[in-house]
Image 1 (tube, one colour):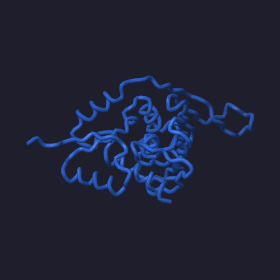
Image 2 (tube, rainbow, N blue to C red; image 1 turned 90 degrees about the horizontal axis):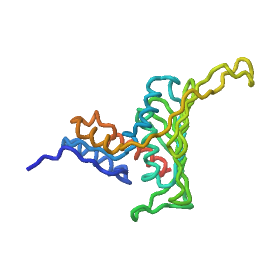
Image 3 (cartoon, rainbow, N blue to C red; image 1 turned 120 degrees about the vertical axis):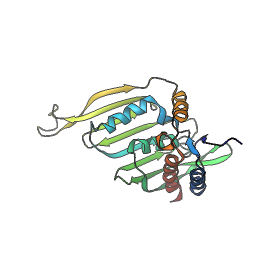
Image 4 (cartoon, rainbow, N blue to C red; image 1 turned 60 degrees about the vertical axis):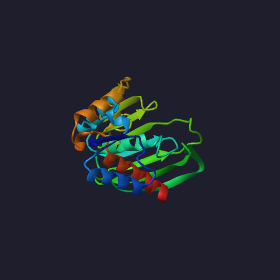
Length: 229
């Protein structure tokens, strides 16, 4: 009988945190690599942003603001997972408020929007604002505040601008540093699914794969914290 080694499943892993934890633990106990399709972790555009953060060009991250659309488990889970990818830390706690005036139905299941706050174990604070009135109103933006600058991701996640504090502008006072654009990155469409499949096939250890059940669980913890308040 063939031995199951890897599972590549769609996000969200589950609408239930308890069920998601069970799935992750079950796969671990049976030595099965569980990979979740948070496809942006394999996108070259977002990996270039991550490289800038890891190189500490702007210093440590302080705060990440995320602006998404309704349906936290489906549409906005990519945005929240990307925040976790950039922060590279597990959530310590999360809370918020569920949207009540509109609930999106996805494959027959209610998937609410909401707004909330998360603190990660490394001290970084994140804000999630995923509110909408229609499944067709699409928003995907991120504002990353760092010690020495700022990164903006906008144009529906297709453009990035990197700013750094310097002293060249004295209009606000001779001793004040202001933000100045130092680099722009535009998204070039590439086949990220091919990158994902190659990553999954070539890595025997789940630790070396970019999006796993464990990393997906962090996103579900944050969403659960927002919806349970």
